Image (cartoon, rainbow, N blue to C red; front, side, top):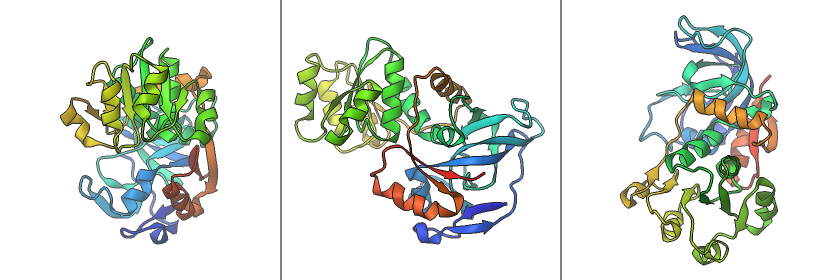
Length: 307
């Protein structure tokens, strides 16, 4: 099969496009013929060595955890799917080597769900990691209807999903973003505020009683500011600041979940979850996708077209 591989740690320059062995299919996995692979910052961070302290990485490695595609073969005990099923998923395994930047990927059934019919292959590939991160962080702080939720970095890949999910649950959403993204947040159903010094005061100006939950996707002083505004200081979750646990909040590291993916798909098919795609590149241009992702300036997902 054709794939992107990295023979060692490094930047985009170490990526190689070429032929590699087809993956084997474990008993609880299916073989997916990849249509599209989502690009996330964690992909280039892995290749740069950023996850070496916490995950075993084997070379040559195929990057990528997000996928959409068609089931081509099923493992000995993978009864959840059949050949021909259209799926999408967050294919994070316990060790890093066989990822989704390839024509084929072996995916444990726990990492997959059926592709939402309303989403294109490229849109579906842009959902899993960011969408699950948003879903699970909101779950961790128990967001329901009647909550007032503060979403930090609300216009980003994870934040824009969190806004839509919280709105779908009936919550009032206040989102931080730069001025150029305020109209975008309004379209998603959030009330925008500028980030930076004086954030707590700006939030109180539109929510005098503060907020009931907060999710942090940017770090810096977001947890501290959130707890100044929260009525219950334990209802804050962060994906970037592990110190949040020492302050009584929640640190979230996204997990694969077929159930959560199915819920995200349901919202998409009900028209309550949109997936903006900023750029679609061919698989061979993965290095350029890494460079674009690392700028932090894209609004919407970067996706590799594989089919």
